Image (tube, rainbow, N blue to C red; front, side):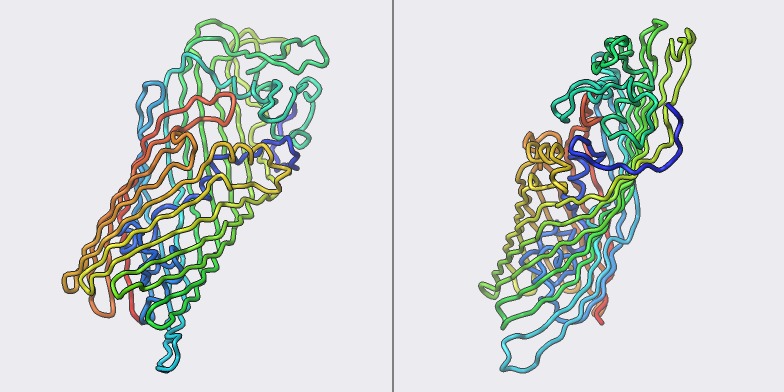
Length: 508
């Protein structure tokens, strides 16, 4: 097959397995704890409080609690540590970054007419980094059971899970990648890299394959690195009715930019001079796009101390673009025609960039209920509870993503998140703390486990300027499968997030 260094346009069919999958879909469905330092110090429990820029992202009615014009900037230092256990071998990796996490401005227009029950109109614009994708994960271990050959065999052999009945790779031997769909590409990489062989080479209609990787112990390494962000810019309008009710609407513009690189390496310790000895398989995925959602919210003062809030957040409709580059290099014996008895290497069709047609993703909406009790000017305690059905995550057009959508529906579940926050004021100083618990979005509760987090912080009021600091910590367990099918051995991951945040707020 000829070497190609080009950009290829892939046309989807209902048998194509897209480069994106369940794990990637969740990246755009989940939201991390981000925003202002006061918001993070109280673990984001602001749905019934308002008066904070990040509170607007929880409940748009919270903007109507502002009493004057304000401008806010938030800087954060985010650190993530992943401890991996793969087949008894422990490894770890760290990633840290510094960025502008939030920026916003709010304008308050008061009505001083005592006969008018509508007391104010508030307009605001706020940007937040909903998800920071900067991360790295390294796993290494000795596998005595499975090789990556199972990945390529799962695409070449009959496989009902992806809706294909086997591929006659011999017929496709002189094809270009632009003539192949994604399933055929994966199978053909394995075929051209001498990883898989036809069961019956003399049969012109052969569509079943076996492995050219000798049995033995496989020393495997997998390194995954991602960079990018998922940001949200909301345009808010809110109003106050009498001294009892607050109402608000957010129109949200989403934009995302994600680069993921995975580097898998396998070395066979079998000493026989036959078959494949080592395999390196690299995948580089670039996803970018934009989206839209809206939020409706209300806050009610049940008494002067007790408040309740309710928010509906619509699904987020994304328009996404993918570019995928794959490189396979194998080393082994008896390569070529005629076979070379010496150890040699091959890199079939490297440096190919596959540019997919744009597609859509609908991330699920959610409901948030909130309660808060305010102790005059001394302090407060608040609680938020959110429900989101992750199984409603859908790729569209649906007829082209039937298999991925069925996988999402079968694997994901409805999950709740509890956030509790408190604040105590001593003159100009505010002391804060919080707790949150987020349930797993998976039905099995193991692929991604529950998240538990704690936070603390303090603030100082200089008058027209406020300075807030916060620290938040969260951990969760997960299972990281190196590939989506065939070779699905996974590493057990313990992830710890540490975040230090500073916010400057100016009254205008």
